[in-house]
Image (cartoon, rainbow, N blue to C red):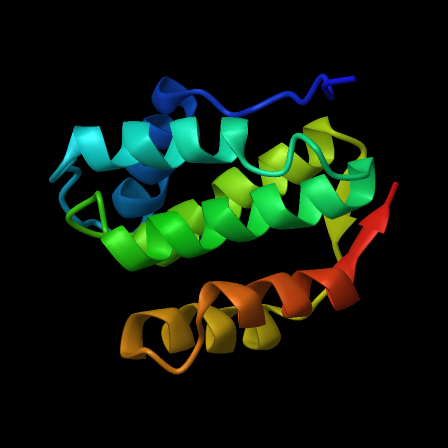
Length: 131
């Protein structure tokens, strides 16, 4: 039986980025909207055969890793990835319990290649909790 997950929309993710970069007086620009669309399509299909909590972790990891890695925005990709992932988790009855330092160390690791999708899944497995 498929899960009924609630996903952030493309427009919502763009708005997260718009607010984030405006707060920092940076420019808002979507560098590659197709990349963002592919990330959202990917998370909608991945893990549907898994137990609910396993699927949540897998989808959240793909979202967090995907936006951070492909950099669809000109600025604010890490923060946008975190915002989109947090909203996804919250709308589906979960939240991320980790410090900003722990999270941004992982996000920076995605960019510099020291964190892969599997390590992000393992991190979320330890830090995502049912609300």
